[in-house]
Length: 112
Image 1 (cartoon, rainbow, N blue to C red):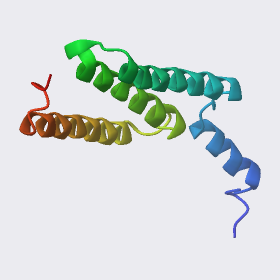
Image 2 (cartoon, rainbow, N blue to C red; image 1 turned 45 degrees about the horizontal axis):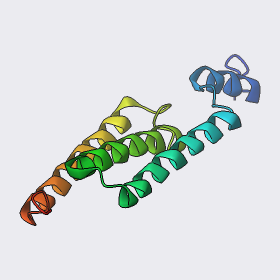
Image 3 (cartoon, rainbow, N blue to C red; image 1 turned 180 degrees about the vertical axis):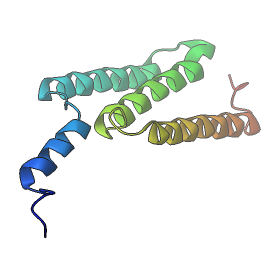
């Protein structure tokens, strides 16, 4: 190994630090967990409170918000390549479309 191209641990660490990002604090994760718990409580509350025809759209919006937070923060998509985020968003759109088609096929929308 030649000495004119140093590959010390310090050089590798410096290169890694350039690519690294600042991780959120534990407090940030706790705030997100509390937000997810509040949204989940609101979803459960829809069982006890009659909100009429707004039930399915309301539940779907809450589902999308929870999916976003879990994928972005706990799965670290916020810090990864945009390609991974696009894959997850595409999956969310497809899952929502399949869910709506299944509800339509079973005539759930008109159920009173």
